[in-house]
Length: 260
Image (tube, rainbow, N blue to C red; front, side, top):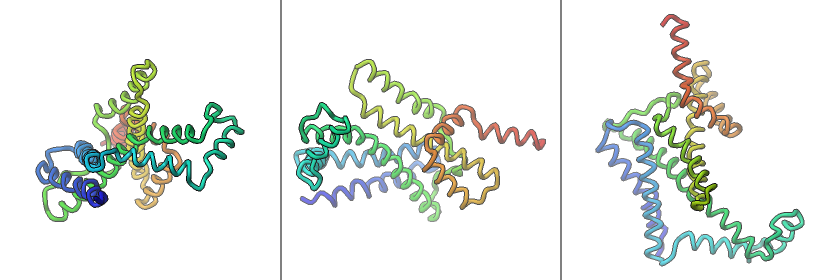
């Protein structure tokens, strides 16, 4: 059985249906952030259903197939893994590896750690894009749809912001104590938190660029450039604004200065 059409329906179409039904039924009773979380959850649910269905139909995990394909390509592909390992040994790396199979298993293990992070981040981005597109379509059709604040005004609820900061730290403590191997979970949450706060940092930067009357097109070009070159600093800016409320302080100061 060709699984691709089933996967396309589950991952591409099912989230659209779930998000559209959610907006239609709930309307304006939820806030923007809550819709983003539920939209990401719809995509994540679709991905998990797809993975589970593949296991039921094929009798093995889709990741088992992927890892085996990578291992075969690594060992029998155009790149000679044995020569690669010899080069690494010359560089003083992987001295405890004596075979190409060990190197292949190590590389696959490193990829496996990143899978939860990739799935979570993809769910958030894809779900957010779908929500914004479906909401726009509903709005054009005069169907009640939730309000979306201007990008320059995006902010996280305080509890969500605190949770995003504390979760990576808690995983780190658990890992240090040797309670469990939570490296993949810690990486997933850290990547997710970093991405969310970097977007919040872009929002803050966009606010001050707009306050400085930078033209819209140039403003977005600067935001994209800042994200590409200074993503870490945008993450810090997003965290700082979340707790020091830089935009609110600026607005209040501006009002006082102008006698507002």
